[in-house]
Length: 135
Length: 382
Image: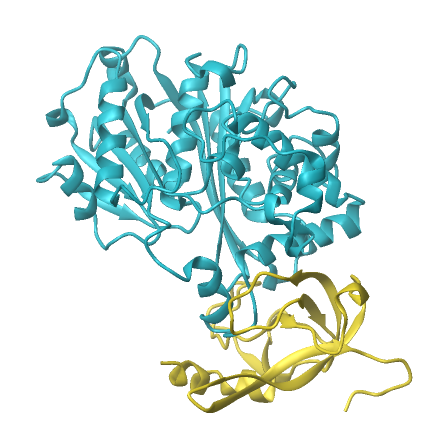
């Protein structure tokens, strides 16, 4: 059963909502909290912001061994978003050998899987092409 | 807690693909081996409390009572990802040091082969960030890529760890894999999660281990060569907090070892031998740095120079580590304690490190959607 967690997290998954601590500026994503893991203020106040849309690859891997639900090889990255927040994302529109630490990427809204005919859409990231603004 | 607790017995079973053994049979064998290892003997009735370490085992400590007959005493079950074994041991040490009990047993086990799918599928499919292809190998591979980028290490350096540990495992009776591999084999193996190939990853292994601890003052009743728990530490981290340190290493390992060194009044240079968490080859390189054996970013130099080889100045994973011995999660940390116990008593046979008097045990585990880790460290002394 997957629906309740998808429903609970839809603002993060579908609207890219992130939560910025008003005390220290830490950006929490996807966790919507009342306590800040960085400055430890509890409770703190959080401002709702929109993540990204651009960021930089901090590190990556290329996953070759994956369950049947996936079509490997799939590049995966940890991305530091402009404006704060770190995400874990599959990388689309990018060949494995084009992956580089430091490369600029942007959020790319996609269908990530289907279950029982239910289409689950969320983000991946893709490389920013020069001279092209993110949509 | 320094030196208030002594290890007086340790038992392991041969790790491997144990389809013929149930969890009960595995635990029973480790338990009997631990009892029989006590030099001057111990009666089951003397054991006052027990801790069970298992990640996926059945609920509650009753799981331990059935194969050991240790009913009518307190038995607690500990789970802390891949740090489960060391953490279960830690809790037994707390209870002894606090003076609540005089004698206790810790048993760790994991049956990795009775379920299909397993941890890789679990990580890739479930949890909050569902279906984002996250796996255990990728969690560590991401750090490998970052280490290569930031510090100039190479895939070959990681491969050297697998070559070393498979060499050691070939000499260790309890190891799952007892066959050496060449650098070329490791380098040419199919990629699992770049830069890690098949031989950079630990196998899927069943296993169990048990250790008996007691109040230090009582230790000589059981053996003339007890091993003392000098230091203990545990910490957790997350790369989501924004430290770059957590991209090419584990702040949890650094902090857990800092706590253990501080309690023991020892430094990284004092360590003679270690069983440290090489779930993937790159992890061992990161451990060298996080445990303070070298500066940050220099871990690959230690493997290049043979410092951590069996005949090096600071041998790491003489048992073959997780890469060769295997990684039955709850058993792993308890087995490390048992192995360092044998090393410090000079009973490690073909993998004996000469004149080892101070040893370190270290686990690093993954949790929270592959974003966080937990580390547990113990320092044992003769």
